[in-house]
Length: 454
Image (tube, helix red, strand yellow):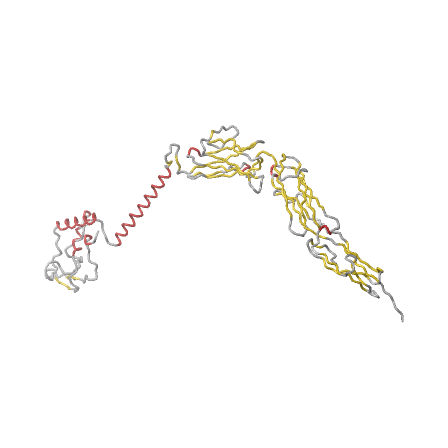
């Protein structure tokens, strides 16, 4: 019988990539394709085919473990497992111009060099940036290696006034959280206006605010360090030119306070507050804003509402009072018109109108006007119910003798009230004319205004 010997091959199932710091390792050593198979054991710890490492730390990084396959006491095959421990990135240092500090002050046009160093496995991705510049320097993430990975990223800027701000270094390698460190750089410079807005024809647009009765505010924005303050302010009745001479501003009518933004450190806001002014204070104001490195002049206009206090302290009310009187008169006219319409719809008359009607009655009675002759009366006193008609060829009615002076007088027939609902026809004996008394029950009788409550 022929016996064939085949050398075995050592094999492990240990991780081929890196192991996160703090994790465990549990793998075996085995042989394959051997005849005979032989025995597979780890050299350390000896005599066991199983390798167990608990809570691995970065100081174990690079340790080697050998898996051996033996025939009797002879090693016929082996394989080595190298432990790679990964850990999160950290920033070891961040300095500006080789100075490690939380803040640094430089001058305009200085070269500012920032260097940030990070450590991690894999080698971390690192980025330098600021609020005004997205990326000053950048290094991509590396791959795991047996050496400790120390990475440095460097960036530089030529300092300008708007470069004042917080500069940030970030490091990350996919293990744990991103790491961040910051340093503040101040660039010394005189104020620079940030909100330049050209108007028509390229002339600078002048900000304006309207003062009524409460304090109003206008903001100007500058890039500056140190923080500027108001050094002078002048008043001009008209828009000033290069030869104009301004007047001092009285009291505390115009106040200016400057403060730096907490996020954009280069940005300084100077708030102009107009407090208690009069119409004579309307015009242009030129404020000088500056620090130890220089200043800048800003011009703004203040308008005053028409209804304002005059310099003497009384209301400057020529326009306001006129408008108020006009409104009051219009309201009164509307009220009077509505009142008379209401009276008319209720058939009321004013006392003076009732007196006029009574005078008209007296005047009509004084004329001793008699009813038309030939009308046959039924019953005693005035006819019960009749309507006078002018018939051709008969004596003219009372209406025919009316004159212009009788305008507004009450008709003599207005007091006739219906007492009967019958209709009668009467023929006069002397003329043969026919008179017809009509039913007045459907007519609305005249009602004297005095019968109503006033």
